Image 1 (cartoon, rainbow, N blue to C red):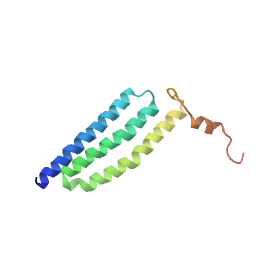
Image 2 (image 1 turned 120 degrees about the horizontal axis):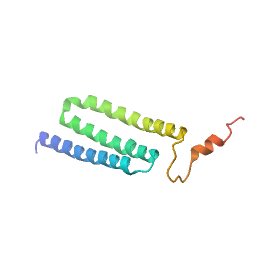
Image 3 (image 1 turned 180 degrees about the horizontal axis):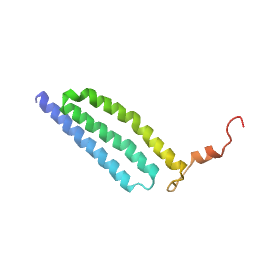
Length: 116
């Protein structure tokens, strides 16, 4: 097995696993009941899929490691922040949760601020 064969094997495995994660994220986007659960599926699982696809691209084209690592870090930093901002905005405009067990934000809004 040559180094090219090994790189091709790693790239194919990363593509398969990344595509699997992306499909699971898409399935979660379709099947989950509310915006908060959908954001969890797309924010976490979709991020893993995108990072693995970037790994496959970087392995297949070795000149792209710098860009791929930069994009991976950018995705891992901005993905959760974006999902949190969208879910916070959805909560503030009153988008309901489907069968909530607990709502910590409503209790925080009703409590007086420290020092009042």
